[in-house]
Length: 236
Image (tube, rainbow, N blue to C red; front, side, top):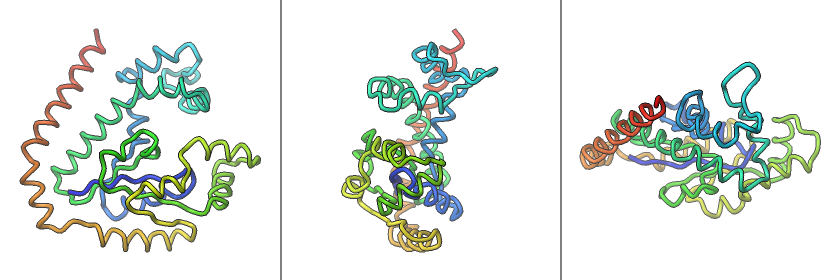
């Protein structure tokens, strides 16, 4: 089993790469999707976020749901608030990601994509031997972001780009880099060639399955018990 950490810069094409993997029936563990899941009403992370940020009017009108855009605007550019939010959510996000990875392992998948927009920013690259960055020309990145998010001002777009680690630095840290400065078809061809070079063999997958079945079964059981404890304590 090979776990590939997928990341990129804002508007460089990471999402397009992630969608390609899904179409190819390669499982994708999506950190953004999980981040939305763990802050659903009455989830433990939701309660922590509301406890620390509820006084800032972060709930949607006529709803108990967290307005993620409003919350994002509040923490943008404020390192202290961002760290506080991360402390409320990141533990739950990683736990759910580990559970999904283990489930895919039990389904006998040889390659699993862990899609993490801020993979280097949160330090997850330290635990992954295989990381892939989707990059593109910096001027093209700026234009794509302005078009995607309907931003008129260059400085506003650059502020969002600069809130992340520079894309050149991400490329330097990554084990693999794929340039997405061309069309989507070109990106797909590059991804297809890339997968063919890193896809573990069937024999290797069987060997990993035999070696890890018992320890991962134990880990998954512990994670499930942890979830049940959180659900119980949440009702108290």
